[in-house]
Image (cartoon, rainbow over all chains, first blue to last red; front, side, top):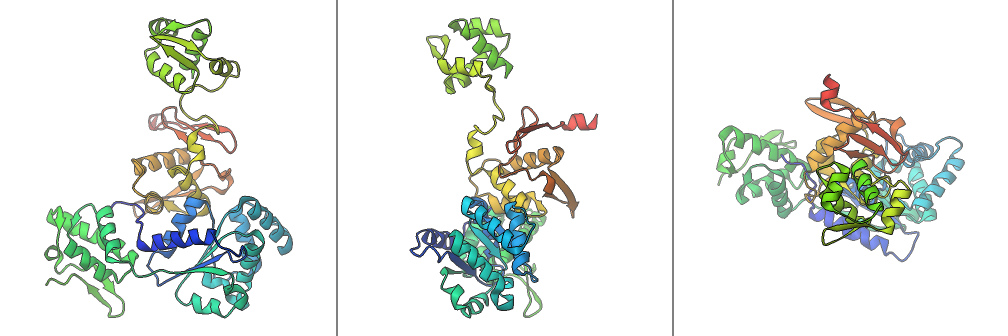
Amino acid sequence: MRKMFITTQNYRLFTSRIEKMEMRGAREAGMMLVYGAPGRGKSHIVAHWAAEVRAAFLRANVDWTPKYFLVELAKVLHVDARGTAQQLFERLLERIVEEQKPLVIDEAEFTLHDNAAVLEKIRDISDRAEVTVVLVGMERILQNIARHKQIHSRVAQVVEFEPISLEDVALACKNLSEVEITPALTAEVHRLSGGRMREVLNIIPAIELAAKVNGDSVVDVPDMKDIPLSYDWTQRARKGVKDK
Amino acid sequence: MLRARNILEALADGPKLTRQLSAHCVCREVHSCIVRLRKRGYVTSREGVHEITSAGRDALEKDVKLGPGPCSDRASSRKGNTLRSRAWYVLRTGDFVSLDDMLSLLCTGEEQQAADNLRSWLTALTRAGYLTCRTACGVRRYRLRRDRDTGPEAPAWNRATYIVTDVNTDERYYVRTLKECLR
């Protein structure tokens, strides 16, 4: 399988919202929330954008405290992490204001412990440095943040990552697969993936392997009959194509 | 580069024809060298006669690096959002990453020979001591050594000269070729 980034509809939605964020009226409303079901490419898409803009990218840990977060941020920004939380905060603020780097927090659910103490610290940074902060989390994060008024008023944009579309799957099959996948099989890949890009990326190598064994350069639905391509965790069964 | 410098030194004495320069510099690629110098504004050519410009004289006086390859922070690749600069960001912010991880994350399909480019760069950085690598299940993963995280600019790798240039520290590392490693 070829390796490259696929510009899905979710990516286009995300970048368009980022552009809107840059043009926001209230400078303190600098936070964006990205959420959606697992496997829809949230972290991957945000990491791609972060590499483009050289954002400070952090992955929250389950045991994060405000000080732990500041130390992690200091490591990423190459700031001296010694001293009290207050000294560290001041040093970090200075660096962030100077560099105006956006801040990305993946697995942002973990910032909501202890009455969102870590997220409050992130809000402080966002307010004072006026930088864009992107929070990435699962579906429930939206309700959890809604409980904290002082925080959700700062969230200027909320982006829900939708299940990937058939066009996205077709684009992935075209660009990533080393064998040609027919439109009918592409539709089956879309169905089997359940809207998760992660699943598509697992199915394509399975198709390539089957094609290699059979010596096919073009693969259609009948070629993949009886070959398990995905695993259904709800029914605990392997799934394959439906040959109509 | 010695060849380009020889040409400028020869032209500093007065305008010359290509064949005169060839005789003076004893090198076979005078023409391509002149084209490069002309692009940089150090030489003008008219009807086969080449002449040094004032910028060329300045470069000669100031001992500016004239050849191809790493040229400190003046290279256009330092300024752009290049594949290697994005890959350097990923190395600095991430832990162990494989070449495939980087390609999936960074390549949009517009880059030419992205896999070869990054593979060669990663190998050079590993040999220069920037990266540690480990192989698991046939996949090689790279990690930036924290003591070698020298700054935001990606170290440059020049395949022709086997030199890794770190613009953050102005240090240069000669990377041994595979042949030399095996010797």
